[in-house]
Length: 544
Image (tube, rainbow, N blue to C red; front, top):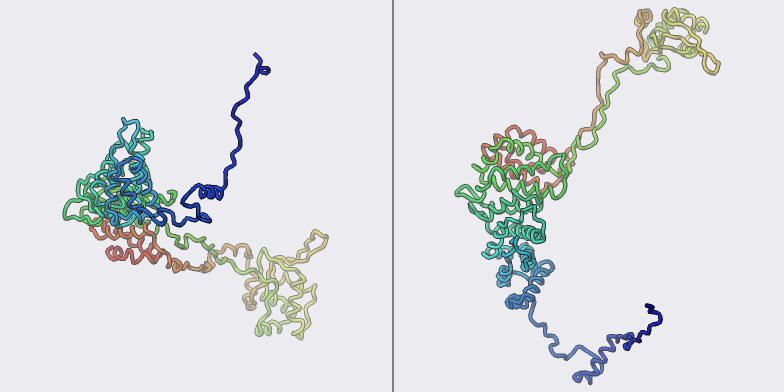
């Protein structure tokens, strides 16, 4: 069938473009049709009904929305509280608005987390409420009010005891939402824990946090849990049982193992530093009462040795201090254990030695002069012309006697040094070099008798033998000592100060003192590296 020739009816409706009037045109149309504003020359927002009447404030609107019980109104109120807790937390002051904590707690639902349920309509509202409570609890006025609300504490405990939150095998949306709620709840517990401490023995919240600490692999959750447990142990003592007495060896082993993140092979980042700090604070709060607590911590040999080796390292962990080992090591420069090289020219005779030699007649004068100003050595050599020029310079102008002729002078060298010989060397450019082998210039002239004895000794020494002369005195150039005063202005971190508190706490007890016995030298070395550490660990140095 062909559609080309078929007749298609034309549409009865033809679309036309709409020309939208401007805002001014709309205002004029409004004025034209409004009887109340017909006589106004221009449109003004004055004299209108309800003008300058702000209506109820935000707190009153929130209160009425919660009291209405309508789902949409309650959701709006919770969302508004969430936005205000981030942007304007002062609007949600619980002391000025005591009704707000009850309304938020009423919507803090515990009916979620049933794996059999396919959906849960309260989960988003519950998540928003716990985030609001967490945010406003950063203010101490609000955190004290939240901590004293029994409904909030009841729901928090139910969330902590929910078993499906730590099941790795579950990956559905409900499970992810429950994990998110757990993180927010532990954050909230951290902010209010200072107002409900110390936790009594067998406290359900304290035991639930311990269970989470042992089972969770979420680093941020572990850090927050450690902080909460540390605050719940504040002000506990040995007069009666507290929650800290429920801490087992497994917990102490787990927390102590986190200290190994300070090793040189561990990758350092801010999350590791937070975990290390939380672990040190936990151990400090646990050991603070002393006595049986310190004994329980150190009764395990491996755990005790771990703390003994890592605790001194924590005192300077993360500090950028300088030592002679952190800087580039200076090169050790040893002075050469060799005699100085032979001079290019023989020495000038002293006045008395010159007078004695000049009285001799030739060739005796030339012979004695050569022995006093040169010495015999097997691997030495001088040129014949330099030898003659030196002799001529010594006696040519100052002596009244005639010099020995150059030819006779060169022949006389073999009489002065029997082991020497005149040699002619042919150079690459076909020139010849006339040398005397077997002698070298002295650095200082010697007496006539000494020169004669050295010239006639056998066998002749080698100059290279003197390069490895072990009898020569060894010496070293002094190096600049490192100045530790450059570390005076280094400020300690929270990890350093917390480690110092734990160290002082351990050394105050007999068990801890025995463990750290012999560590005083290491602690003094840390003080040398970072002088500001002294005031923090002085009690430990005094007791060790």
